[in-house]
Amino acid sequence: MKKQLLTLLLVCVVGLGLLGGSVDLQAQPGSPFVVPAVQMQDGFGQQGGSVTIDNIDNPKTFNPITQNEASSSAITSLMHEALIDTTGQATLAQSLDIAPNQTTVTIRLREGSSFSDGEPMTANDVVFTLNNIIFNPTISSTLKDAWRVSGTFPRVTALDSLTVEIASPVSFSGLLSAIASTPILPQHLLQDDVDNGNFNAAWGIGTSPNEIAGTGPFRLKSFVAGQQVALERNPFYGKVDENGTQLPYLNEIILPVVADDNVRLLRFSNGQTEIYPPRPEDVPVLRQQSAQGVAVSVQEAGTVDMNVIAFNQDSADANLQTLFRDVRFRQAVSFATNRQGMISANLNSLGEARFGPGISPLFWIGDDANFPSFQFDLNQASALLDEIGLATGSDGMRQFADGSPVEFTLLTVQGSTVLTNDAVLFANDLGRIGVQVNVRPLDLNAVIDQLLGSLPPQFDAVRITINGGDGDPNLLRSVFESTGSLHFWKFSDGFGAGVADWQNEVDDLLEQQAQSLDLNQRANLLADFQVLVAENQPVIFLYNAQGLQTFREDRVGNFSGTVENATLLNPEILFRK
Image 1 (cartoon, rainbow, N blue to C red):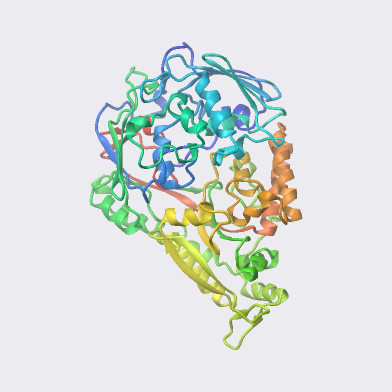
Image 2: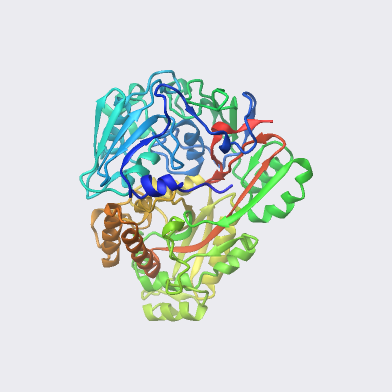
């Protein structure tokens, strides 16, 4: 089921920072957070049992700060939590006192909050997580981008053992969404790694489970590479149901490593797993299994996740670097991308074409009649390539001025039929305008390594999906701001080398919207941002797929859905029937 991006509370108070005042997240300090019964669609569960959902690859890390791929976040999201979340609930925060201009938030922590190893969680852990880890220039994390405003980070201070003050130098519309995106880590386990400069390698996949602790509903039990991750319930978790039963209900969540879509489908159909995020082509088959307890849900297409094809504008190949940096080439490729063909062939028509960046529905203008459009047009694409000066040889293929062929390799994720088929269709269409594209499927982690594992990145082009966060537009800065940690398509922008004028304007717009507390002004700034990005196509936007969910309703209660393939929503209230 579709993830709720922002509740009214967060739209007005957290996500946009329009209001100030005190927000009491639950009365009675010292008590656990009580999950309202209304959120439990199947009612109260009982403790015990396990649920199995296949993961698409081995996790690369158990560190929630440095992880940047879905195979890791599927695990870390179950083990770690933030002070508040994007639905307005909290395990760790008792109350928030928000300054009217949203420059300062004072957070009172819930008494009795603990990490999964039983050690108490205090204000010092919050200060440590932010000042020593997130704001640390030597530590790699996409979360940095969510916290930076006016070129700096907020000041974080422990007022006492249970009270933290976070003060921004300017009004910061994304402050509370940054808080909601940041898990709190244990100082007692990680201080030495920070002091020794080893945090980027901390909590790797070889770490013993008893050396890892978080505040989430589960903790690591075991990991066998190439086989599975096993998580067990956190006995110190700070949520209960209205009957006083401690959550989570489940004893275990098992995540076998299964990279191939077809194998995952077969395992689910055979009853070896309880939850399976299906491909569009699987929906008709799975609907025929309703008598076996299989439930299928098809939702509207969202606007946050971005299905894209990206070019490495810092390619070591001089011809490709020049070509990829030419906006006419990117526009030509966008015209040559048959989005409707991809949607029909690979999504079973369950999707919508997109020409611009994912953004929360509150700020989406991509359906406006004046929004830049790149409808499939090979003639227009060819004309732009001619304008660049890419001549056509006797074989009909394009050539650079030095006579070498216009050719590049397109990476995609092996085992994902949707991404691979998109890449093949894209390659075929570019071949029709004389550009040779060689599709190369790799496992997910290998693709991520080529995008983010080295500087400069070692790829020509890639078909990938970028997660847009939980709905606050400020989280898009990691991708589209020149210094963003996910700005992998032109990493040199982060060093101020040859930054395009339009990119500087994008940076300014993103900074202005981050400091704006006026909803209309922020919407206008973000509209200008979207138009600029769509005009320049720094990445080729493809489509938004409709959300698809499948689970065994005869075995699992209170299923709320998944994101990023295997990342479970509300895992604490799942129960085994």
